Length: 266
Image (tube, rainbow, N blue to C red; front, side, top):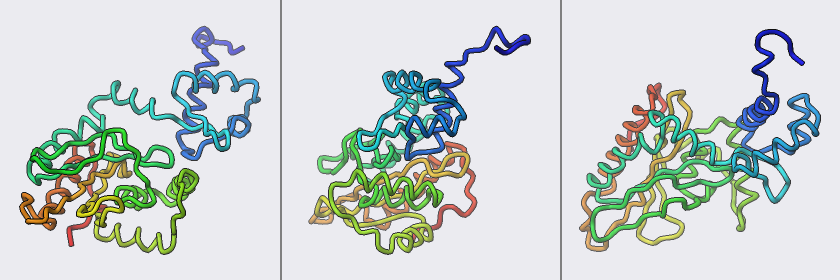
């Protein structure tokens, strides 16, 4: 029992819960309860029920593959409501709405959610023809344009953890040959461009969004739909320029100060 004036304010269970969340916040690959206990210098009995309650409340997610616990997306949802000034979606939405008007193309915002990409915001093009992903859609980080951008700008150790998770989720064989070289190319030009693996006539264009601390927080992507008769509002070169400016604007809204992170267009 702690003594002194702060003793009456002690809440051991609450403290342990936040210790667990903080610990897992630095380990996107997750940890088993026994691993948490060792790293926290506590017994399994001290934290077991707290972990179970956090999972029941939706703040932790248990992997069905290896019983590892990781922070669930509910924490981000809570952060969105509690800190609207720093809400990624709130910061991006006005720019995204202008982007679809200026380009005549749909756009979406993707973040990393464990081993997958997650569409957390989208704006559909205002015309009669277009292509867009649904809100909440999962994106393969290893094959998608958005995933390539997100992985490129992650720190190397975190990138490998995310890749390992993505491989566990993948149901098809994926080649990782020359991946580092591809990341280097994306980092040099500041964006990614590739033909859609799923939809003919669509070329995905994606730029990174950075937070105030300089870390990548999302990818802003346009699935550029080129019409057979060429009647889309703008060409792809112009679309890349406008998309890059939009990504920079959202990063600026989030408090990011460029330091050579983003390059000019090709």
